[in-house]
Image 1 (cartoon, rainbow, N blue to C red):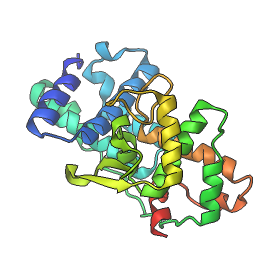
Image 2: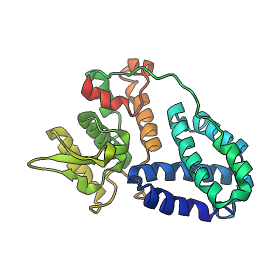
Image 3: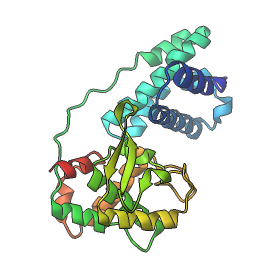
Length: 262
């Protein structure tokens, strides 16, 4: 049974030994959660009953293909998920040397090569169309508009955006968003009046406590990178009805940072 290994990996290896950042731990957790869910759907075996034979290199390769073909993940995201899996298996081989051969085959799976994409810069017209796309009559629409407006104005990375809590927003005099960037360095980013208004309305509707995620699902779970990418894709399709040239662009979360730089 592999059940004890993931928990020990996160608490002992990542948190205690490597002192990984909450962002890294969250990214690894998402990767392992997706893998275990994929295997359960494929085999009918719950994570608590999985054996190492359920996680062969063939299964891992099928999972990686699933990420790209069915979940729409980029090659870069696929490789990030693979890095998390390889880290887990590197820890597991020390705990279960009797499965060393099977584990080594997983560790031998190489990252997929890819061409670096050309950076897309969005015009004001495209930005306006994107911000107008979320449906203001729906809870998700009001959440997404606040989220997209914040991303456009501040240039936050997706990981910074999804890591925000309700108490990271300061409104009124000195309005700013407090975020943790690379190297765990905290930095305040000033907020302009339109974004303040959207965030104020969202915080009132969200009604979360200080440490609750700012942008969440209806059940209160923090939005993942994949969820943000999916929502952006949906709104891009909507925005393209009034701005057809958007369909010719590769719109992904990182592009939102380059609106600020344009």
